[in-house]
Image (cartoon, one colour):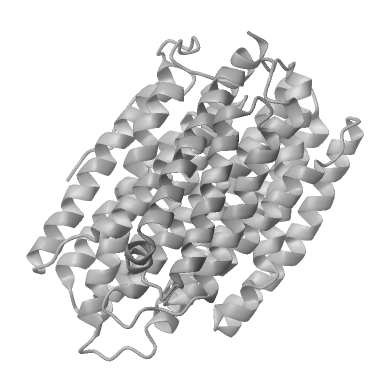
Length: 468
């Protein structure tokens, strides 16, 4: 059993000279997506049937070739044209088209088809997030010029970002009660939808008090992301469990975001925004607690039609799923060390990476004890998502603050997955898996506290980098 005792205080707080921001990061990321488009497009044109099998769907080869031609054209545009904004938005449009195809196409009649579809959908969602972030950044700043902000300017920017986050939350929750499949969970989502409307109004008031206004582009992208999440939940089996776990992770991201907003507001001397951030943050934390109480119900609803004889198979499925979550975190954390912002944050991510790697190995050992192994397909898709999130944060001007909030959210995605698995193991009387979950959950919650201890350092690193 690993120890999560770690002390980061007192380390050097100077910005890391390895961090890359601004136009250089933008250019690298946009070029990377251009090469990605070319590679994917070539595969779709040259091997449409093989890719269709890889994603578990019955797809018309001609349709796949057309999608590939679109990818190739976009890749060429990104790599050869100096004005990349329209080509990045073309990628976003293409991602949404891909999601629609994944949702509408029939599954192949073969074992593992649904798992393949789940992995493919997760991968497309991760790529969509990167494309959307780069598109917004190029549209707002033209992809040129290093961004410098005063503490007040960063406060206004962060208020705008949090307003967009609330727009995404509303897009997610508007349909959540209808797919929750439980009256209590549905009521929790309805209640929080009303709270989120109020939260969005409060954030907008503070933004406008500083002479700012919501970003139409960012809000539209975030709303699309919210719809994409609901699509992901609908196409996956055991919708209720996945809905609750992903909502739990999103609430954790929002809570961390408001903690960061409060710190930026304090440094800008805006104590009204500090109070708003505390009020909204308390509501996000309360929703997290309601969702934690809902884990038991979510597990029961998800497995309501599963017999006792079949429940063991589902333990294996969910062990493979949490292993995939760990693979995503490992990729993200490996990248996080170089873009953390300072030595304190880099040390936190190094420690977190060591613990997550150990968790991954322990899950692998449990899978081997059950005479199976992790799902390499799912691992690969989510690990690629982890790398894509690294590109996303490199393209941000305020990477340290946003990165730590996102790592906090990913950690709670893992916690939620293990919480459901623990309950499934209890149902199956699998004491070894239950004990493994209890140990890992405790260690992940300790890491979450460590991340919270790093919030002040992330705030300072962000402000230093923006004024350099």
